[in-house]
Image (cartoon, rainbow, N blue to C red; front, side, top):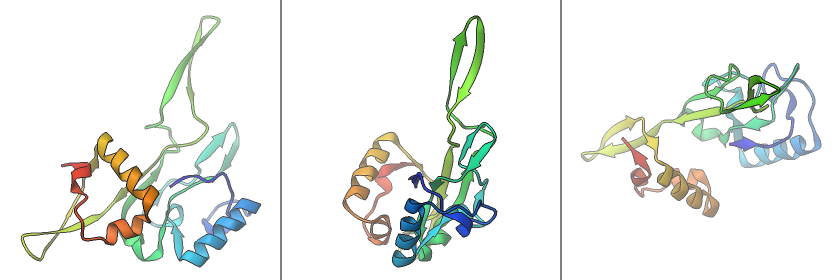
Length: 160
């Protein structure tokens, strides 16, 4: 998930057709590694990730293995800037709120585990700040899908 600063055209329904050089590379990588753009899934609400005055574009993506798309509970692109960080600017006695030109993207996952033997459960968990730092270190070392597929317990990264 991130600001890829490239355009991938109609891989996202309703998007502009432009595909940039970096977008072609990203599409090749996605095809080769069997990855899917969550922005184009039914779980995703919202489309435009960057809005600058009247110009709208999609430059930020959530990408996941095709097999893992069902692990996405919900993705939200905050086009209304409800959750967007902002700063208050004061100039010549006038105060105004200034937002980033990129919209916030939130992605919620279905983490599936087992409790009490083979009882399958799904819990919604919130990652702590400390857990986020640990998870960031993990994903720098190996693929997210490999982390998910491991039987190891990563629940210590979350608060209930």
